[in-house]
Length: 280
Image (cartoon, rainbow, N blue to C red):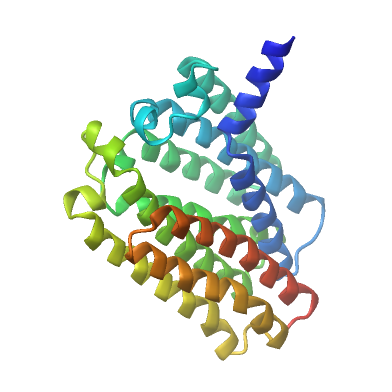
């Protein structure tokens, strides 16, 4: 019985529950910012969460060799669960998520299906390429907000700007993540940005991503898309993103990623403030 619970705990860890939770909340916030709120929004959020959870498991299946060096404490390198179990659990979660998206609407189904294919391709081979793999993950992070607005048949400018901000945060974090994972990626003959250039040059891309994201956070307020209360709440993710950029370009990429993850959570908080205290 103890072994069973250890395996279940490892499978949950495999799905990156915090990332899944962020995606679920992002879908809901995306719908709320476009004035959409009914049970379909919750169903859409669940479908997105399941797809992401499955893709995370699939990612660990493909990243087995690099995780032996980069993330040896993950369930597969530790030998708690097998690669095949991770693959099949991931695939089942993805298929369930896609199936649920069909009941939300055709547009959501198409997005869930295409995003699943893109993320599978990312895990299988696109993560080995510079920029393209980073772009796909960032795109997935951004489109989750739009995914939540689509069932309401109206994607507002607020949701679009929120998606752009999410894209920037994810893109910068992926660049710094590639720098941190460089040793394992080299062992697996991957051609990520810090490998084809060098870590310092790659960090410049991450820093630029942080600076652009700080602009993305401010521009919707400047054009009065978001209101004054948002501006106050957005100060924290704005500063967090700036700190992440400075830390990253100085070589502290692990701390940079931590600040970007915190900025994501704080950014969602700022968007929730905008929902309850709208600017327009």
